[in-house]
Length: 151
Image 1 (cartoon, rainbow, N blue to C red):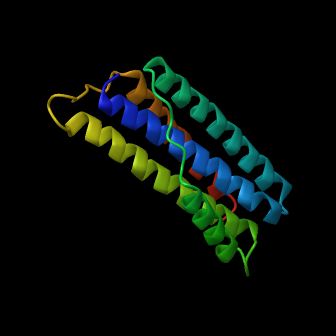
Image 2 (cartoon, helix red, strand yellow):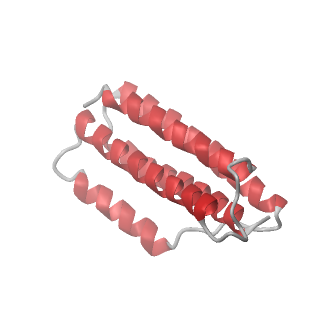
């Protein structure tokens, strides 16, 4: 496995794990049952992406890098602060949309670095890692669309 594929798999894994952690932190604040169902659907999707990224790394004899505890704690603290005074479905959906948008940026950046990076590791967009990134971006876009109805 080349370095670019490893980086893309790691970014998919990181995004999926942080998405799961964020949703778990938000769930206790959600009263709207349909929003809760949509968030659960998104969280389950993240689980599948994390497993697929982990499998891709394992095929290359690599392991995913776990997010630092401090970063996870900071994200949870940010969620607590963001929802201290507003736990409306609209605000929760806005937070979910922001998270999905940030994931799209980080995944697209990893893809661009892989396709436009150092000539020795440049890829064509045909690798499994690149395709998994593209699938996660599409998933995040679908998730954003699903959350818009709560705004």
